[in-house]
Every structure is written in structure tokens, then in C-alpha cells.
Length: 400
Ligand SMILES: Nc1ncnc2c1ncn2[C@@H]1O[C@H](COP(=O)(O)OP(=O)(O)O)[C@@H](O)[C@H]1O
Ligand SMILES: [Mg+2]
Image 1 (cartoon, protein in one colour):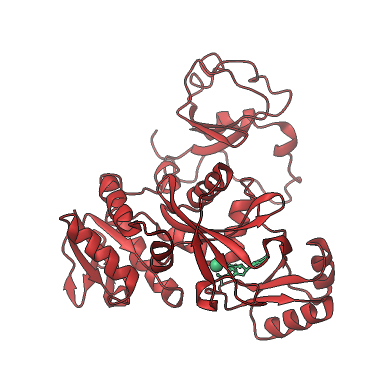
Image 2 (tube, rainbow, N blue to C red):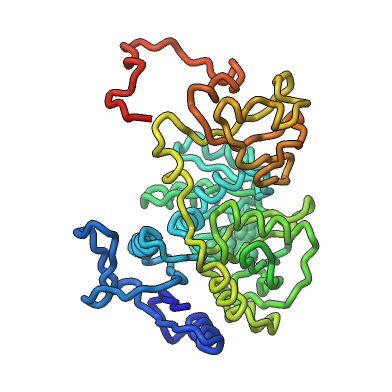
């Protein structure tokens, strides 16, 4: 394949290792400076200029986007996606991971355990929020910190309030999070590639520091992860939309507790700790996926007028419970079941013979008009409109 590694730092360990691994495997590879791209929006087809010249064709791109250039970096990655160039981490996935609040909002929807967290703005809501997550000591985090900068442990409520007030007065948004004491300054970094954890290490903070980041002097050791830690790490990466990710978890009394998912995880720490060829594994994975550039399903499927992707939650009492997908009549109503989620398992392309159970969630693609009748009444009820409703027909009819 012909691979572009997007990096501002061609000389650093991670970039060097990725480049060497690609060359060793006989691929053509270039390290390109993310900030030297110009996004050309003047042509009918999406294009990119690099150092003033039209970019040649690439099969895949491996973005290594530093936090300081997130905005521009995301625009460049998004442009590669529009050009159907494969990337293991999409712009949307990277954006999800960069903002700690956004990441938690997305993950919490999917039963991923995280330290209890609150996001507040008004001064009056700070104290109740601290109580809600379990009281002091409490962790305060800037939304876009990395390398442990912007993560503060407040020993008591007074300090917590003062810190939050100070940060907010400089227009910084902060999260209030339960301090997971039992992790004792340790955390787990699971390196996820595709659908599996390829390596993991435990990081330990030095002295009385509670942040275990390597940049804060944390030490590392390889670790063999239990199956539940592996499953949580892979699921968290998948939910975020990342195929190469460093998932950080605390070892809480209840099990793995996800703190964050990194979209450009460093290679030096994990390769040194485990002795494993992570760079090679990334390159092999990218090469195996080149034929499948990531598509934005929403962008592709919802442009069919009148059709939607919707999730049908089979609550107690639903007439579909106990029926097979075949006999449910969904297909006749022009509704296709894309996936079936049962507990934490996702069954892609479920067979027609599968019997539906209460609490199943069906991800469906179909006619809006038909699907609306499958959503229970309670969820559909809305306040009476006070303005004139729109006419039934779309303003501009498109032929179906
Ligand atoms: N809720 C928490 N309880 C205990 N330790 C934490 C908590 N949140 C973060 N830490 C420690 O602080 C470190 C940095 O936090 P993290 O959210 O990963 O920020 P960063 O993006 O700066 O790495 C973690 O690796 C962990 O050691
Ligand atoms: Mg971290």
C-alpha cells in the first residue's frame, strides 16, 4: 500500500517506528506534516494540496494528531475521508476522544463503566455536584488536557470550589470526577488495534503523585489483562470510532473504569514495557483494511428522503417479542434490521430465524412513517404545537 503518516514530528519515536515498520513490510510510506496541507474546496471532487502541489494518490492515512493542532488536523483527516482514503481513526473518532466531556457522554450511553462525573457551570451547582460523585477528595479535569496537565486532585470541598472557580473565571470548562482511591496512583493502558487488545501495561505514579502519566514520571510494567478489561477496552475504542487507540482504565473495586480513550497513543512507553512490535501490528492492520474506507453511515443512509436509521427498543408489551425477525413483518413493512443489541452483545445482520426478546434493541433502516408506529406511545407524546404545522408533503417532493 501507499501510506501517509500525518505527523508534525518526523523524528520522534512513534513516527520513526511506524515509518520503519511500513518500509520493512515493503510498503511505500511518507511522513507528511499535517499543517502543510491545503484543503482544496474549489474543485468538483474533494482534493488536498501538500506543500503547494496537488497530493498524489494514497491508499491509507495514519493520523497522529497532537492536541495543539486538533482543529486543523481534523479538517485534514476529514478531507482524506471524503477522498475515500482509508484511515483507522476517523475525524469524528478523534474529535470524540479529544474532548473528555464528549467522550464520557458517548461512552455512558453504552454501559461502559467510568468514574462518576459531573459537568456544571453555575457556582451554585458545584457543591451538589461534588456530593453527587461521592464527596472530597475529588478530581477536577480540564476538558482538553493531556499528559496529566489539567488533572487536579482537590483534597477537600473548599479547595475544590476554589480551583473550579479559578478555572471557570479564565473561561475553562471543567469536569468534577470521583477520585478512585483504590487504584492507588496506578492505571492500565490497553493498546487496542481493530477488535483486540494487542498489548497492555500498568503505569504507576511516583511518590505521592496520583497521576500515573509517563510524562509525570510514571513507571510502567507489562500486564496480562483479564478478559473483562480487554472487552471493555475494545468496546470503548469501537464506540468512540477508533481502530487504533490507547484506552486508559482505573482498577476500581467494581472492575475496569474507563478514564479516557487516546486517538494518537504513544508507542515508546508500550513497546518498551512489553517488548512487542506495536508499530508493525498497526501497519499490518491498516494494510488489511485498506479496501474498506470508513463511511459515515448516517451521511450515506439518511439522504434517502423519508428513510431513517432508528433504534427500536422492544419494551415489555411490544408485539414483536417472541416472534422471529422473519415473522415480525418488519421486512414487509420495508424495514431492515441492521444489528440486534442484546445486553452488551451486538449481533450484526441477525438471521431471520432469530427470536426477539424483551429489551432487545434493533437498529433498523426503513421508512420513517412505518417505524414511527413501532415506537411506543409514551416516547412519542409531545407538547401540543402552538405554531402552524408544516404541510404533510415535503416542501420539495423528490420522486421515490
Ligand atoms: N478519577 C480518577 N481517580 C484516580 N486517579 C485518576 C482519576 N482521573 C485521572 N487519574 C489519574 O490521572 C492521570 C491523568 O488523567 P487523564 O484523565 O488520563 O488525563 P490526561 O489526558 O491528562 O492523561 C490518569 O492516568 C490517572 O493516573
Ligand atoms: Mg491519560
